[in-house]
Length: 260
Image 1 (cartoon, one colour):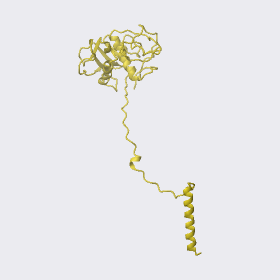
Image 2 (cartoon, rainbow, N blue to C red):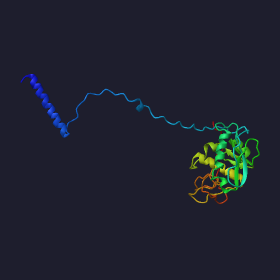
Image 3 (cartoon, helix red, strand yellow):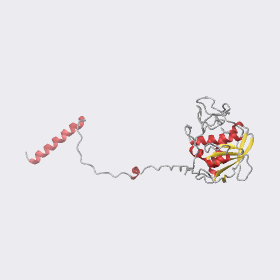
Image 4 (cartoon, rainbow, N blue to C red):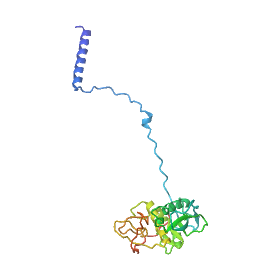
């Protein structure tokens, strides 16, 4: 057999063998040379755009502020609530507190007081925020720890208070909340506004009525929950939630210093 005829016969035999093995599904994979890297489509390598996170609030303050105030603008519209005495209030932030404006603080106060779970639910009171220099039944003030002591009956530098027409929110609590509260800072802020405004409406301190249940808003939740759970609303389910009159002999934590 010539060499050319021999080569043709050998190739034919190899093709027959490969076809037979492939048909039985037992052919080993054929070694192939490494493929050249293929370009990746641009759309596959570009991550989807991410939504920008809102800037985090950063409030700073000295231990003792200036004792002067920036006041929020008047709220448009009529009073919140269906029935009851209209309580007019102003909102002010002490100068020297940085990172929150009077209007921004006022928005949170107003949103809390206008919530249907707040004091308007009892239909004894309605609330209307008035502007600088206007007559008001009370003023909600965001104050430094030192000014809080000057305005409140008792100098502890830690808690908030109500004294006369002044509803005083200690900026240290507004920024830091309290330990072991078991709820977000936003919930604590709602609580402290409703608690101190509650004092302006004539409400007294109350105690936890049942372990595992919500604390009354007039419980001193800043100092301890005593088996209750955090609750910022006087009417959490449409009904006034109360506990026995009285308070606990809780120690007040050390006074707060400035935050820079």
